[in-house]
Length: 468
Figure 1 (cartoon, rainbow, N blue to C red):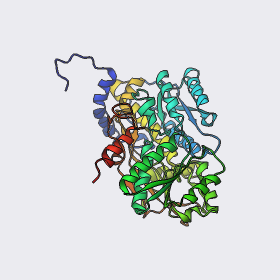
Figure 2: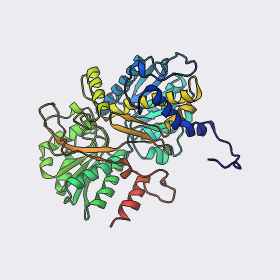
Figure 3: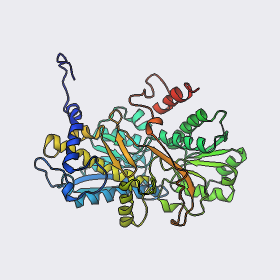
Figure 4: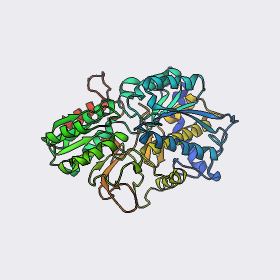
């Protein structure tokens, strides 16, 4: 409680945040459910709407890779977004009135063009929401522009720590649904340390931009903390969207590593693994990845080796958990496959869940203020919001607007049921996100340390300096 002598003003947003939990409980009770989940509902479960709601479309701008090698991630995200929009619109739209309309642009146009397109979407198209974005090179450029324009933003990916560590350290309008990037490297490090604890000589192949640099640093920090004597013996840095990985493969082979950590993604990873097969790379070293299973599941062929630690951006694979233990994902996979005739990826889950997070926040805000809630009210409910998604429980932390969910990783295996490799269910490990990310309000770069990220400083402080 605030001290009665404290007369400092309370903003509308702060006030709404303090009552959001009670409001959420009320909506859950009204709909007859114990928790909000990402997925369609029967008419009988629709929340009671307060006030008059206009029926004008709710306009969304969505930028993602529609062409090129990164389309293996961009297209599933687009499809996940559209599936959620179609389901929400089938229920009448947001608050039963406002149907979602989406304008899509190609992220492959480049960062400068993406910034111009975001401005156009907001100023000319009058979008209400901005979503999408795959590349970690783009979110730090787009985040500050979204804040400047005052456009509510739910990034589905572009997971770099730098977005909220440096580019937008005090976000208001910008949120992100996917797990933070440093968690990728740490998740793969934990998986590798458990599977191959005697692998001391580590090589690395990463795309030569922020994602690859981040993966390499955080993997090595975590792996060295868990495997005494581990050392880096070779690094390869191909340009993003390379087509010839031969010189990098021969460099890695010549170093004779025990373990390779690979952060290549999309079409780059597909090209790499197929070329690496010709050199017998997978027979000569263990391989851990952050995004081998990050694209469309069917993009990886049966020729992919078994026993590779296959990352999925640290959170979602369509067959996990198995044995019908998570019906929310089971039904999502069924609906996605029926709509698109393919299986979803982590991008599908992220884009899909983003719209249901928005829907939940709007319903909670309507319950508080009546009528259509403004962005201040919606933001107050997004902060601290959690829902059950296909990937599991996802929570938006209030201090940095970052989404968090437990991570998972497993080994590749070929099975008769699929024309592509999947996770060996016996190999899958799940990791509490609290164990691999810096806690709320951990100092950011420039706040008492000069590490590249808050996560790097947290790793060095708690994993390395305090280890037995």
